[in-house]
Amino acid sequence: MRARLVMAALSVALSLACSSNSSPSGAPRASRQQDVIGESEITSRAGDAANALQVIQKLRPQMLRSRGLTSPHDPTGEASMPKVYVDNVAYGKLDELSNVSSNQIKEIRFINARDATTQWGTGHMGGVILVTTKK
Image (tube, rainbow, N blue to C red; front, side, top):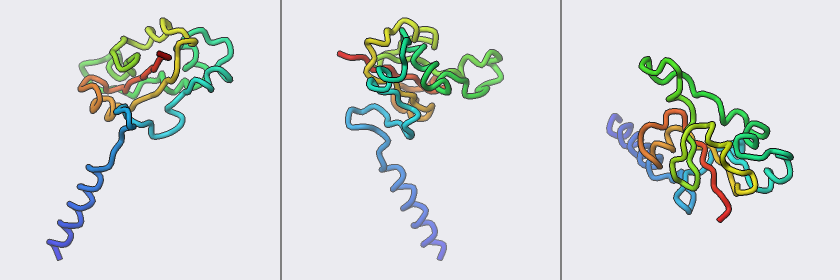
């Protein structure tokens, strides 16, 4: 009986480990549509938003929130804020989003901390806002 329980637990763990959480391009998939802002939504709903920061503030402000205190050594909570990547390259802190014109954006995607760590390594406790530009 105990051997069957162990085998069942291993089977579940193996199936979870083998499931993919990435898109065909290798970027982590968003778990919910609320984690993605596409080009058509920016065009139709963002109105006068001039840059990526304004687009997010208008359409998905929850992307900009802190993910809680991550360490007693970080009293400002800065480590719990999302980091910004543009075309899979580290771009900086949230205020850097104001340097990306809304006309250049193909997609904005929030990547949770676990998936961001898998994709880019440690140091992404607040997740990542990934901006993909038109190329």
